[in-house]
Length: 291
Figure 1: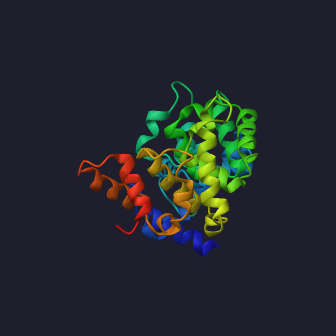
Figure 2 (figure 1 turned 135 degrees about the vertical axis):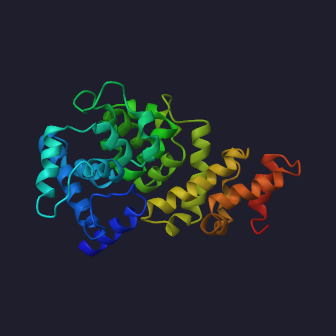
Figure 3 (figure 1 turned 180 degrees about the vertical axis):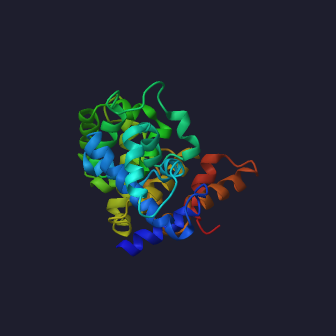
């Protein structure tokens, strides 16, 4: 609803650099108008599909605020003046894109390509993002993939779609594949066939999510699925062997549903201080999550 959108924008404005040229009363309205104008510009002028233009328009609020501050604000003229600004001062589309996929605005400059400003100059990353989003990846979580392995976004849409389809063939839903890939980006970046170490990971995941019903607890919730996958990764990072701990994990649903990843890491760090091997610490936490 309009009220929900306005409230959400008001909350996010607290994290923005100050928009000193706009009275607080009008900031939510100005943000909404600027988002719509940017979406229309990317779609109608820059020829992006509307859905993806809207994703960028709604999720690049820091970059957008920089444009808003360039305009002398007036309630009656702001929408027209903002559209004119876009028309005569084209934006760096990559800046808005990288912020929109969830990369911290302060880090965006480190990812911008040299001497390129428009997707028409190089649409590789946008095409990859569109393919991933079309499969079910939340647009504003794609940055988790990009910051961990940029090579994923150098692949063609066909390559990514084929890779995702092969993962699905192991019996996973789109939601499960999304959660797995966000937590383990190497699943998408690998050039090799799925097998060996990856199949062992799938075996553990299947036991945790399918055979023991944990998937029902996170059904339809990408964030919850991703969080569980991140917790599985904590144990692998501690040295627990893929394919060997799935059954033990599946018996400790409470560990994955109620204990945050941060708490798991803190517990692991605490016990490692006593000279206990990481692998042993991982097994200890799985066997006795209440400690």
